[in-house]
Length: 207
Image (cartoon, rainbow, N blue to C red):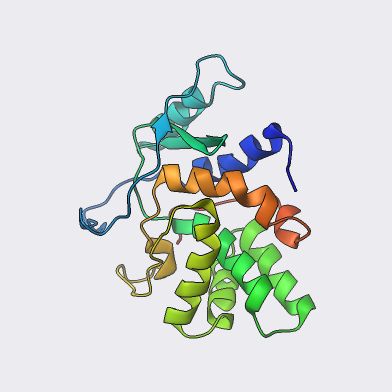
């Protein structure tokens, strides 16, 4: 089932919310050989819709970090800003939620309550609940990766805690172009689920 282009663009802004970060000396450095081939990217056409590039630059300037934004259109990722590759942080909660809705052995009311909390308030405890509900870490990673793969961009979901106090899955290396392409297919794979109704928020510093 197709959705209007405006809906796809709005969902693609999910990538924008989690792609402003302040780098630290403890951020893990991804191996240059560990990433799958990257999707094609292109610059956003100036004047096409809201000036998202300026919005990203303003957020980055205000918070003293780096920023990046992405849109998906016709199977192509359009990106802007200087930050294209960083840990997924809270963006990963979306495919986790979809995987849990499809394969978590829990009563529906509890499951949907946790999904709502994870996506509408970026509740980390709810996200951990969903992750654990999917099985052991390797199984949870595979199921989450299967959801991401709908966008045609295989991503290896992290199962090892690389930063104390942060989730393993939140440190998954998921590039901005890959996230934008995932957002582009989200209207189809999330149709008729609570994910499609949830206003999504992100707290990039807490995952």
